[in-house]
Each structure stands twice: as C-alpha cells, then as structure tokens.
Length: 120
Image 1 (cartoon, one colour):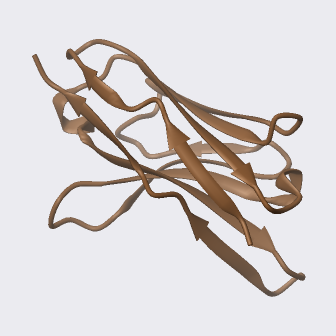
Image 2 (cartoon, rainbow, N blue to C red; image 1 turned 120 degrees about the horizontal axis):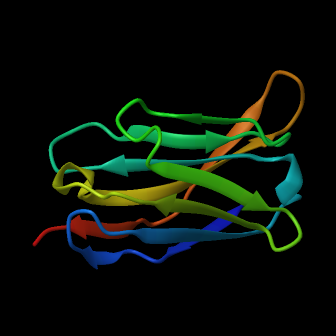
Image 3 (cartoon, rainbow, N blue to C red; image 1 turned 90 degrees about the horizontal axis):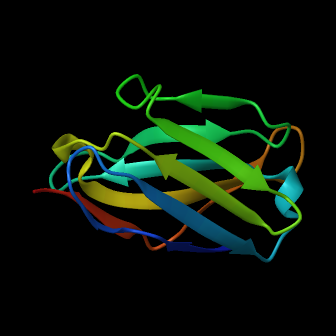
C-alpha cells in the first residue's frame, strides 16, 4: 500500500508561482512512476506531468514550459513547480503513484488532492 499526501496548494495571482509537494510512504518509492493530475468540477481528471522511476519526464501541452516535475528518492517526495500560473490552472491537484508488481501488473494510488486557485 502506498500513502500519498499532497501539500503546497493555495491562492495565487495570475503570473505567480506555487510549488506542490507529495510525500509518499509504504513502498519502495524509487521504483514507482509518479505523476500529478488535476481536476475541475464536471470534467475528467487530466494528466499534468509525470516522472518515471528512471527520471524521464513528460508534460501536458498546456503546462509545458511553465511547470516542472521532480522527484527526490532520498526523501520519498515528488514536487511540481508551477510558474506563470493562469486562471485555467485552477483545479484540485492530485498526486499519483504507479507501483510495479511485476512486468505486467501494477497498482495505482492517489492522494486526496490539494486545491490550487489562480485568481486576482
């Protein structure tokens, strides 16, 4: 079982920055692929950024160049640095972990989410 706890959300003005953090416990963190998703009411949860166990990163087109995902395997944390924030970035942000069981099977775990509101 993997427990994920997000922190760092809040209210920020357009153009501002926030840094989200996710603390993981309960598994060998370095083996997990990690990601940040976001969701607004009445819309599907969307992938924002991901980082593999080997450190490869990928981003949604809407955040590329503004957001940066990173991980610290020594501290069992994954972070999302969000710059040049826009009102459309307003959402609940969720930390996600994909834990490999074997070459074919994995388990998915979610945090409870942290609210990010971009507004003047």
